[in-house]
Image (cartoon, rainbow, N blue to C red; front, top):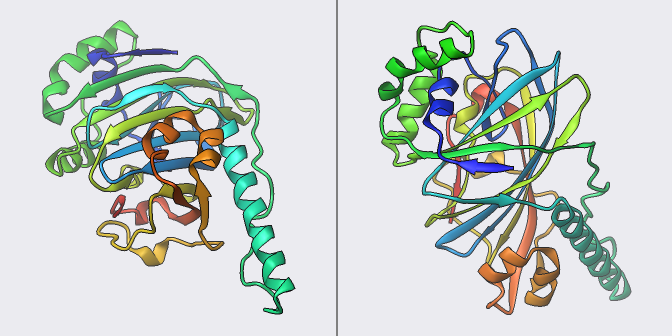
Length: 296
């Protein structure tokens, strides 16, 4: 995996009509290719000032293609390879604690507990490796139009204008002070594969998950987020809280349990004696996400 600042990739990314899915804008180099993303999974740890976003998706395409993904962020991120085991361990911990709570409730004569386990294990396909990641500070979408045409010609690709829909989205993010963008290049085929997880750490005074970037896409999507915070969150100024489904009661985990899940998340939150972990489920038509998920 390579992480670098590469403005040529940025120029290239804006000159196609975008197919966007889930949390990232997805741009196939062959504009006639369809991209499929049946599963989106993320784990977010937030302490009030800094967020760790662990992100992985299942992907396939209607034919072989190179794919460029665009992820907007509120501040410059530290980017590193993640671990799929974090998702498995977190799911197992939630299920184990909910089963224990249900048994305790039954022993104490409370009848059927309303706590339901998420059910099903986290499954993955063959992993995609070899990410080519670029991080840049983008201040003006218009500033990349001129030089982009020449760069694309070196790749034997003809494109004269930036997609208006994508340009408008980028300008909206910049206007809202989301000026850092991560670009990730992966190769896809017709077989579904699990995108090797990438972990992003960045400063933010609100829990953040990008959704608005999906607006230029078509179709329906489902997103599963594992949320870890010191306490439950009350305010949702972006995506309305009614669009977030909580399939189970939040569980309390200790710092020792967190250390076994993810060392970086432990460094972020491990000073606390306990934290709250829960799953949020979000679904809907891609065009319906006109706000990002923001909470505090």
